[in-house]
Amino acid sequence: YNHIWTLLYIVFYMPWFMWLEKTVTTDFHLVSMQIDYKIPFCEYFIVPYFMWFGFIAVTLTWFFFKDVEGFYRLMGFLAAGMTLFLIVSVVYPNALHLRPVYLSRKNVFMSAVHFLWRMDTPTNVLPSLHVFNTLGCWIAIRRSEALRARRGVQLGVSVLSAAIILATLFLKQHSFVDVSAAFLLAVALYYPAFCFQ
Image (cartoon, rainbow, N blue to C red):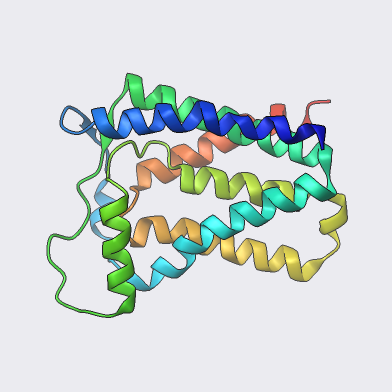
């Protein structure tokens, strides 16, 4: 498993990201569009939102053990996008003010949302890594020769990916700007990461 060295990227990424979380607190640009205020808040999307963590972990683990070339391509895609995200956050500090100030309803889903909001600040949101990494894993699975013929897997991954992306909007974790930027970044990195020989 010589390709395990690629996981050292987290040692590069996490300190930089944590530094951003501590420094980008007041002086930032607000990113949003009119459509963001028309999208209703829906706490039930917390389920696919949290499923993202398992989706990314399972996908990386599968490729690590089953498809080394696919793993390298996926890691290259993710690392490039996440590094560009860090650079954007430094050059253009950004944040959101979309989270509802007051929500009267109480249920287990709302409790999970409040937990999320306590752990994750609404800063450094452009582009949405939740969306970008989801797209990366979806692309890798769609292109995998071993998984391409497994229609159940392809359908399940597509539905889950769509739900995760929608969750970022319905939970007010990201704006339409962040999501669109993630799609554009994924398109820009698709060929060099997945098609270049």
